[in-house]
Amino acid sequence: MHKKTNVLNRTIQPEKRSIYPETRIDSSFHEEIAKTYLKPARDKREVLLTRLLWIVSILAIATIASIFIASSNIDIKVNVLNGRTPFITTGRVVDWFWGLWDKDLYFLKGGTPNRDITRKAFFVADARTYSRMTDDEAVLCNTNDQGVATYIIELKKPMDLNGLDIKYVAKGELGDERLVLVLVDSDSKAVRVEDDSAAKLSKNWQVYTINFKPVKDLIDLSSITAIRFEFGSMTVGNRALAAISLRNVSVAKTKRIKWLQ
Image 1 (cartoon, helix red, strand yellow):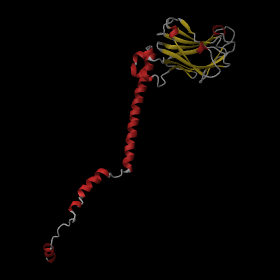
Image 2 (cartoon, helix red, strand yellow; image 1 turned 90 degrees about the horizontal axis):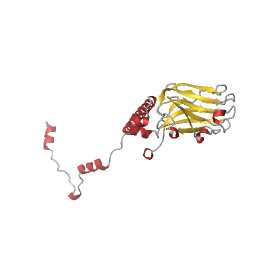
Image 3 (cartoon, one colour; image 1 turned 90 degrees about the vertical axis):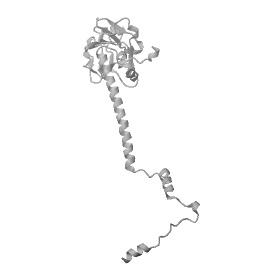
């Protein structure tokens, strides 16, 4: 009871105020300043989580872009196999990507024929004696018996080569050998694609590109059934036992700027 009385009888002290009212500190005002300008340091786990979310987002975008490009590439190859040109069927977006990614469709990868589009690859005439195939390359070697030596890549279905090029990698044993490309269409019409810059080989591996614009009126480019490589003594003037290495024969979209065509 005595304690209760003391509490009730205690004089309430007036709030202490600054003798200078104009300089009195308002704690609520200081709290607002602190919230605005003095942000607390971010927790390391929060920083790591934010970075992780950014990385996941970037990977997701890259994955979606890769799937789109890969799907377009499949569409290109399917259209080529069906005898249609990708330039017409795949649209402008995929057409733009041709210059950024490797979209080559191989007849011969290394020295191995692509069985999805190639019926058979074989040597004829003077080429049969010493020529051979390995996993890495086709070795073309003629003799002097007949003067005609040919390596033939025969396709399963006729292919439309309009707007496309043939690319291959080749070299000669001595660097003075010649290799001439011949196209055959579904009417068995054959035409030699004479290109001195591609026919004359060097001793080092080089990539050669053959464009068919010079022969487009001489053969049906929309229905090509075979590609031949001539390297005989009589047909291209090679010496007897000339040795040529050939690999990575492919078809690729002609890289020309549309508005200049």
